[in-house]
Length: 163
Image 1 (cartoon, one colour):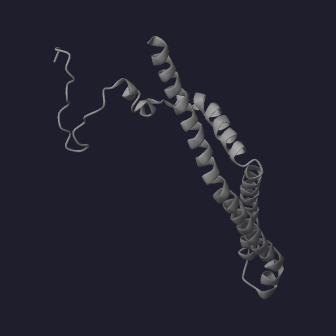
Image 2: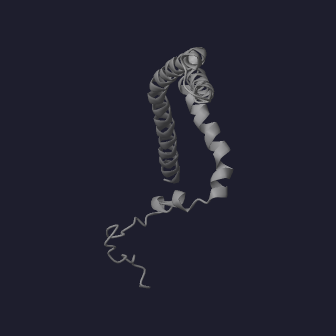
């Protein structure tokens, strides 16, 4: 239609009617779906800086605890996997004997200790993350509301100065 009216798309049996908002504020609806890999890769450092900035502002003592314990838990997981590989290699190298099993006890104890360490580190990291996540959400919401209020104030000032 060329008479200036908005054209309503046909009904899509899979996704519904397909009606989309055409107001100016909705012009970027779905823009995130059009991102390519390189565009996303280009924006990633800025998004990471923004995310870490919010997290640091929300809990500057919780963030290092959460990050450090998660990294240490990952390192402990790698160490446990290597120790498990060494234990299985030792146990399965030949015919099973009591002597071979007794030789593998220290490695098996190291596997158990590493598993306990990984679990403790992961639990501490989860606890720190559990306390940090609501604070980050609150900080992001406050920042969003502050910016929305700033926009509203600019509109009010613009309208009042125009009259």
